[in-house]
Length: 385
Image 1 (cartoon, rainbow, N blue to C red):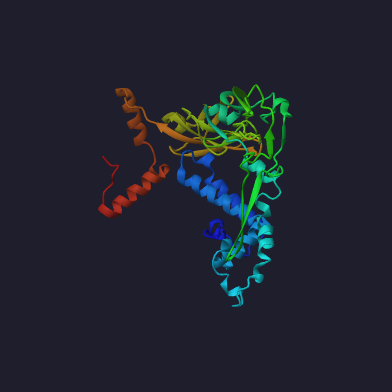
Image 2: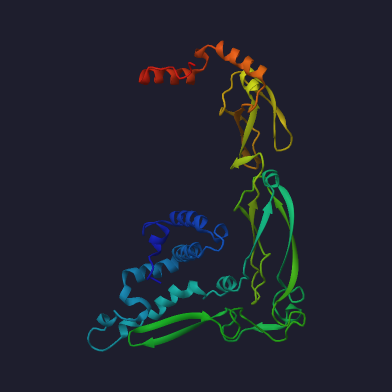
């Protein structure tokens, strides 16, 4: 166990308290959760390592044993490092207490039976991807998904025993699901906990198998789940449905269904968290004179007043027109792009030339600054024909 430094894995000091360890674990678990990194072996391995570290450091007895191993690497597992305790007389009476000490350390690994057995026999999770349209994700929706899984047998309630009662407590492990192997060696006593070979960790032995599932505890069946997806779902966000995963083959609780969302892009809207972004093309006349334009909304379009003299690239913020979620409502950001017609009639060109000739350069700040810089550098007016 002490081959890995669990404190370094979680990024905490060895004197860290329970709250610090839990905070570090939650941050790292969220970062490397396999649901957010499908088919990423490195993320899965890191997530497993983080859970292993937290499982040890969050348990007082396991942490005590682990710290002991860190401080006494040669004494781990009862091998090596014990020769100095014999006093040179060949007697090993000094080791008589180690069986009890290690028994105390290992009691958290299955001595209690129920919690460890339940964790070992839980069914596997099922992961499914659901594609959402942009509007469904933004506004929230209801989706029905169908999939086939190993469902707990209703006849035996997942026990595998006829009528759910035809079983007895395992004689070998006395219902704990684990057995303890003790061995006395020259270097002391070693204790190893293992899943009971007689009952497979369930703590029970079936006396009469369920005829519907043939003693497996589950049946293959199509499952239908209705998902109420809240507003604001985004790509890689997910919903976990407890107990809708694979049934346990050993009578434990079923795994979970994890539904990961993938949101399709929209032709008009873009989003960042709760905020919406819209690119709004307007004519040269509207930008110059101002005017009302219709802007798309999540539910319906609304009118927005473009101010006189609006420049291309100007961004306007409309509060409360973003995505409405349980934690708040976002804004909409409208970026104006001025469209210039590509083809003009001869008369239109003459009108624009007359307009340009009568326009005061002071009204066009960027053009004036550019002209002044060109004149300073080269002594020319770039706009003079």
